[in-house]
Image 1 (spheres, rainbow, N blue to C red):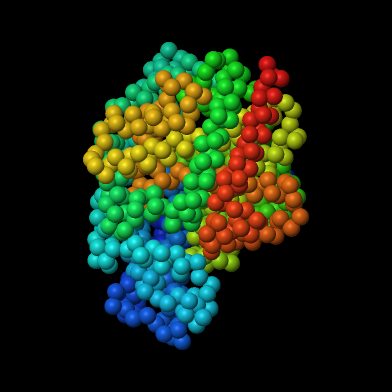
Image 2: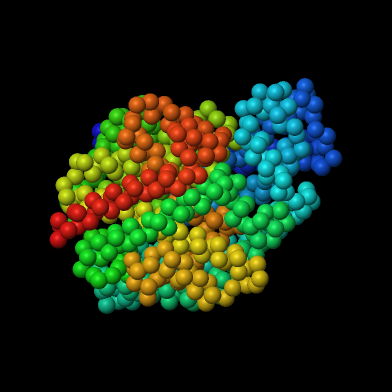
Length: 602
């Protein structure tokens, strides 16, 4: 049992010196020197030089030397960036940490050029012969295979180097401008007969208020404020999408979407099978939305009702109670999962305290070896406990991959949620079984809210991004055209489950992922992650024998095989719509439960 009422803060000591110390500056300087040293080795070995001859199979030493040096450097770079990201997330007002993070960016940019050179070099190798000669090559076979595929889509070394430089003043600069502009937005809103100026994040949080009038005012004020900054945001959107289009074309991709499939370790057939099943589920989600409307005494939900609370509950999940509950149910699943939770609670892995300067939301950061650090903003609710279980799932995934190299553990976005969704479902189902009807309704509502966002809303965002890329090939899109495309996309996904007059036309301004030159189509991997995690949970529920060992082996290899091959080990065919429909059947089951409980509550 965790004693005391105070929520924990994580312990970041032991990873690096404090950022204000000279020794940290020395560590960063040494890191920059290490990047330069690896660049010199690449020059000496002519890594990425198109005239490089393929090494003889019996001569694996050059590959082993280069690869080992690269792995060591990438690990050092990752850990320093992770440390600084944790510091600035825990306190965004830490100017020294923010400055150090900024100083690290050019070092990371130089390292990214080396990564491109390594990819080009691997593309010139006889990987089969090399794997026979080098154990290190055999252990990194998936990385080599993926690198060869990427190498086919590289420009010349000079062009790739120029692109890396120009991105800093192109999409990266646009992204930074958008982040700065939106973080400083103040939105006027009347609350308790007083007009207040609130940050945009606080305005959006009012979507969860039980006061419908306040939710409506927040929604209207939000749209009005986005309208005021629509011109610079549209310029950023057009600049970034134009850059992505140009680079994809020059690298020989048929489209920006096609380029993301390799990064996410799936193929187009898998994406199409998933999206077909998703579209077939829209009517089911509309059943949920109509049931929620009836529960709230409304004919139709509006956009500002999507996250409104509907279930009164007296259940309080204090941090100690949540910790004990999670440990108990993780213990029933596997020793590795139980041990992960135990270490997290006992060894200062978790920063749970909400406080000024701390970023919102939650995340889990791998910190090397078996260690992780988890940031959350804990409140005494089931939803907060569920979120904590989700993040502990990421830590569990990290421990399963502890023996892997930095390259072997590089998991595509489609698979990063595999353990977290599973662990969250495990805890939600256990809490549901112990709850009364009111608490069960709240648990189901939290799940369905999230599932609706990840399946229905993300489908709309996917449709929108497809259309924007298609039209951006010809010209810039105006703010009004971006709004029209967003409304149309939301109409395809939400349909009459929401009042069309209240669709959110500025969702393109809200979501930061649209403004990344390196994260196009960030959206569909989240849908994949939810449905893949639910699908695996359904297998565990139906036939638990031998599941744990096979599952933990899968988690250990998420950076070492594509999604289809990993799923095949469980007898799953990701190319078949049947798998995705089965995962969505778990959502349909919860919609039916929700309808029943909502009527009973009425």
